[in-house]
Structures are given as structure tokens and as C-alpha cells.
Image (cartoon, rainbow, N blue to C red; front, side):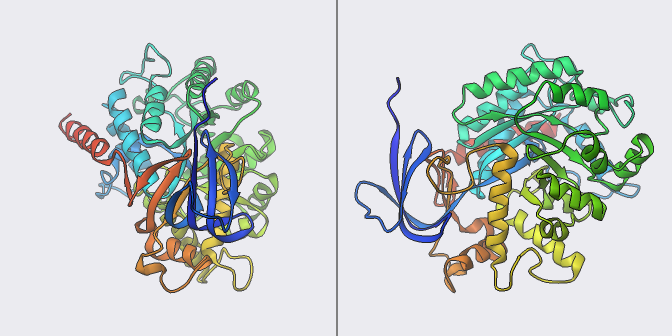
Length: 458
């Protein structure tokens, strides 16, 4: 039996389930919080100066897309949209090797830790070799993603994505999609391989991610769901108006309505984007207990539209945030963009607060913590016993937090300073970021820089 790895920290301030506390001692054993004691002495513990928060979960990430950030920012000959961006993405991934993906993923995950995320859900569909043939190890790319996560110390949920068709109604795939494609039997072998990989990583877990209703058929969706009766289920839904129109033409319903009527949507589901919903769909999704996985920075970058978070939250909906295409990696910025989108669409301020006088920063942060923990089925989201010791510590000496305390700190973090406030990050009980930088930043960044240079020459 392995000896228990134990460590204790004392934080100047911490946001606990019961509210703000000072001089908070957190005892950790094997990466899990064993005890939390406010107003504690600092003896026999590592003092970590600053403001301690539970780390946010990134519920939706395509890590390889980090390396193409900025490559699709030139106007094309016709109206640019998600669909023209997708063609750029297909060309980009045509040359990626497993070594490339591991290096890109390590850099993206390192940035997540430096920017306030402590765990990630990898919605992974780049399964096969450049010619579309499976690798000798059908889970080769998942092995590389797991290796990157272990190197940087981020908590990982593997979400292998099932992608079988090129469009609604079982349309033939395009050449650009050949690296994604699987029939249900082979996809379930990939899921089984993901479970083997996760079993060798402390705290890792596995879900499934049917890519979208345009990439599966009702029969194949039922097959993979039946084979995976537990664990997270993530799916892209209603991201684009064209997707909604095509779904109506092919399946007779809008995507979210079809899923609610035919897929037993409930608390283990995360509908990613869900941007274009009717009022009835919005209220029904909120009532289902599923999480809306929102990626406001990517959705803005792609011109997707604005999710009706105001109505969704008002009717009890749960949400979490993700970085999706990784065009910018910043936990606070995702929350800020979410609120600002509501302000722009409603021409109002402080939309996502529930009560008069409530801090919007704290409301957003708390909701994203709870939704993220649910969506990835992880013991995270608060600083209390039994939770993974994932803690983000903000710099209390930064000028942007000098004007107030407690909930003001969260408002300043979300709306003013963002990732510049992140000083120390503890993931699984281990300090992986100090003074804003990851312990392996130089090595990981240099390897990533080398990959980008080689990609530019291919």
C-alpha cells in the first residue's frame, strides 16, 4: 500500500461554501481535501499569500485548435462564417501528428492553469492518422492528450467524440473529416481504451461526446448511448442557424427540441453552445437538469450568436464555461464575455445577478463552478473535504483589488484584471503555478514554438 501524500496550506483568505474566511488551513491527502479550518495558525503548513478560490472547470476544449488560433482572421472571398472557418480548420489538421498534438495540448493545458482553470473536458474527435486510417493503438491521440495533462498537472476528463457522417440524414463525409470518422463498434473500442488510459491517472474520468446531430444518426446515437449508461454525455447543439434549419429539414425538429424528445436529456448531459433555442426549448432545457456548456469567446469569434443566458438562468438553468477553439484562454474572460453578451442583447447591466445588490462576479463564478463539476462528473467546485484540491489563488497585492474585499475581489477578477490576478494555482494538491507562471513554462513553450515553426513549413 502506498503511503499517503499529505500537505497543508494556509491561505490569507478563501471563499468557502459558507462564505469568506481568513487564515484558512486546507489539509490535503493524495490530492483530495481532507480538512478545512478557518482562523487557523500557520504552523506546520505552507503559507500561500492571497485570495483562494476553487478552480474553475473548462468543460469544452478541442486542444489541437490552440495551434490555429489567429489563422482564420483574414476575410475570405465570400461571407465568412463558422462554415468557412471550419474549412480552414480541416486544412490545418491535415498534417498534425501525435507528437504535434501532445505538444500543442501541453501548451494549451498549461495556459489553462495559468489562466484559472484547474480541470478540463477534452471533447476529442481527431482520432486517426492523416489518411484517415486508425493508428495501431486506436487510442493513440488520447494517450498523447493524457500525457500532456499529466505533464502539466491539470485534471482531465476524456470525452472521445463519436463522428460518423458528414451531415444530417447520414450524409457522406468530406475528405476533411476523414480523421474523425468511426462506426459505433470502433468508437466504443476507443471509449474502452480511454477508460484504460484514465485508470492510470489519478482523478481522471471518461464520458462520451456524440459530436452533433449532423454527425450521427438516431440509430447510431442510440447505440453509443446504450453502451454508455453512466458518465457524462456532451454534444454540440444549435450552435449555428444553418444547423437548426438543416435539422428541421432533415429530422422535423430543431436540434435541442429533438434531443429533449428523443435522447432522455438529464443531469449527466452537457449541451454545448445551444445558442439558437426558442423560449420553449430554453425553458425545457433548464428544467431537464442538463448543463449548458457555453464558450462565449469562441462563440463571439465564430459569429455564432448569443445564448439567452438571462432567460435560461431565470428558469433555473445550469451552465458552465469552456474554451472550445482556444482562441483565447482565460477563465475570467469567458465569464466576462458571457455577461457582456447579455448586456449587449438586452441593453441592460448586471443581467445574470439574481438579487438587488448581488455581486455579478460571484454569481457567475459560483454557477460555473457548480455546472462544471456536474458536467464533467468531478469532485471539484468548492474548497471543502472530499473535493479535489484544485485551488486558484489571486494576488491580493494587485492594485485592481485594492478598493474593496470579499465579493469585490471576484468582481475585479472577472470584470477588470482577469488572468493578471492569478498568482498561484494548486491542482490535485500540488502547486503547479507560482507567481503567475507554470513550473515547466519555458520547456513547454519552447516545444510548442518548435511545433508551430514546423507546421508553418509543411
